[in-house]
Length: 253
Ligand code: 6PG
Image (cartoon, rainbow, N blue to C red; front, side, top):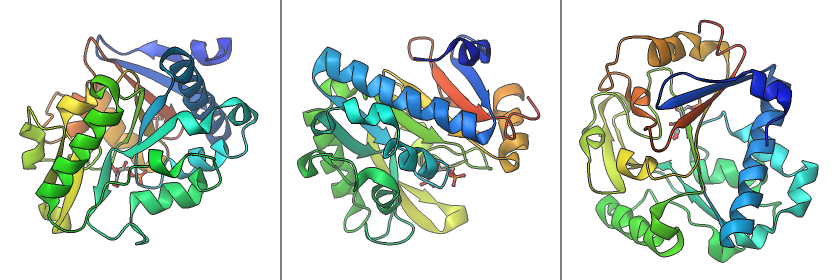
């Protein structure tokens, strides 16, 4: 769990959100990795498995790499780890843009996760069928649909997962996984919905880099306009979101 120093930088923003700014990119990575492994160990000890939904994009890559070298990784029973993805692009899993490929290449092929416990989100074929099938997998392997750790990022337009501004998936109140047309990208995505995101035991939002500072200020400190800045919806009073932000991204908070 966090050290005394980390706790000094860990504060509540409101009843839905906490913020921790571990500092430099190195301190950030160390904190984020320790948190990931601590939650994994806690879940396995308590419930015999660790269910995690991995975020995509570039931010988590260094964290995944760190998992392969961190000392605490050695004590994790990787056979009890169940890997899912919180969103995926509509490309083959082997495509350079696939979140699945990024995570596996960054570290998970080196970690002894059982193949049967790795659940790629398939962005090809009939997306409605794929979304329904994925939700069934979650219902089968994630008790009560409550991920022990649900990882998300934040785009510089304020999106999270593939919940982009002014897209239809923002309105979803029942389904856990669904296709979402993203006009600005002229492409479909598959994404977790807010109802699923808000069931998580630990909801972590990872933000790094000066390029995110303006958007992060708007999301955490600006007027509430979640259709424009979907990341503003993250967190509830029952399941607070923990924003894990490096000092460059936190510069305008
Ligand atoms: C995706 C991600 C997306 C990502 C943010 C941040 O599929 O792209 O799920 O939500 O987390 O866009 O991406 P970066 O880490 O690359 O800035």
